[in-house]
Image (tube, rainbow, N blue to C red; front, side, top):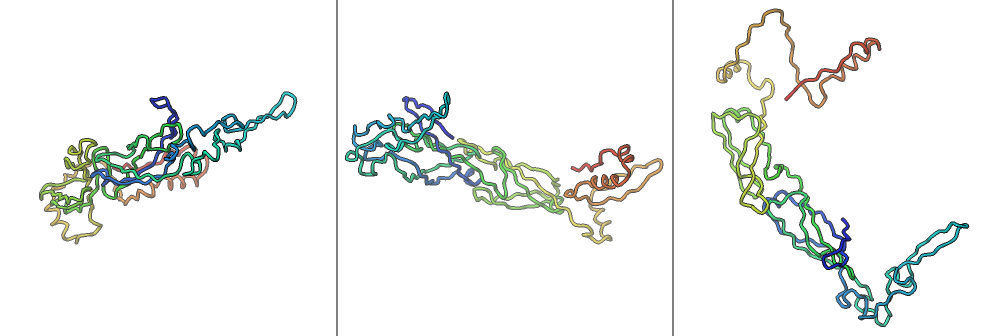
Length: 312
């Protein structure tokens, strides 16, 4: 991101330096201090970026301080071509320094590359896309106020938790027996605490979310106030024929009674249920292919949109 605006004291301001900083969800939950090594331009300490003794820097007479030569060549009557080239006398700097007055430390170079170590404080509750700014720490140049170094936080994907503002979401699989008869499980939170979740026997849990208050992310600047944790329970049903058919009646006696089947008046037709593979679609495409094998006349007059299953 370029920034060539003027600073408050009227000096031209240098460009800001933007750097991504990848952080884990644990870093954003607990806070973290890390050190970041960057390379930037700094003014020569011996000559303060002047390149030589005070007053030794003179405007280049060859290019009149512009750093470039402009040549105009006539191609035809009333048609000219303007060409621009870097001034060889000052190497495009617009200034020249006598050899005897040139700064000896870096052979007259006004700026040099230097490695800068920044101490970065990732505060609890910070979010993806948030910026950490180091004012005036960008590249230095003579007569220019340095810009800022801006670190852009990039949250890495977590294998257990998903963040939504100050709330956390996780998914936990349980069996049918656990859903009907109660359960207990333990998981490791982002601050390494072992959290025990209990659901009492006799209290049936349905597929969906439950909320644990105060176990979400800490709020930025208010770390003792936290969001909530939402646990989505994915109930796993047993496989087909998991129980002896003779035992089904005993199991049914223990479960809530079936709803009464209403009496249907008139003709009925019995159909067979088949398992549905969501990855292969509803089969509407196959039906359309079969229709396409018929004549064009039938195709244009009888075909409507394919029927799809509505599933929750």
